[in-house]
Image (cartoon, rainbow, N blue to C red; front, top):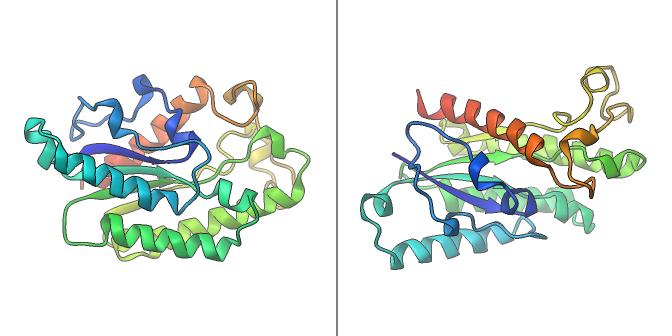
Length: 215
């Protein structure tokens, strides 16, 4: 059995409890404290959240769940590039986080969810290209890490998953500024996902969990 532990920014902190990913190997009873994500978090905050979760685990006593290995569900990086931090620096922090989270010999696993094109980016070609560069770098960092090569870490690529189907598959969809974010998946702020969007993420993450834990 694995215990779902959620780390990251507002995309994770706002994840509805009733739409959390499910799997027969995941402990179904997870207290709210298992979601340690926070709005505005940057990549380096994952290290702080990880330390906080480990400290809370050591001080709690909830039966067999306390000894279950973790399945970390993580998302970060958009706030870093939005504040002007270079992508290479973000990737360096991610590799350090991967070392800390799943770099040992235990049975902890990790799923990292990549950035998504959002409606507010529709007219911002520069930011769209940064998101695309971030996505490519994150994917390579996770998949190229020893835990990624060993099947203990996986990357969920979803850059155009919340764009209209007809625009996300045309040539130049990302760098040609032709992928159109679909507002039906987003809250009124046109930044965060609504329940419909989280349902898409739930299914994508569950597909990854199935591949990771059923092998």
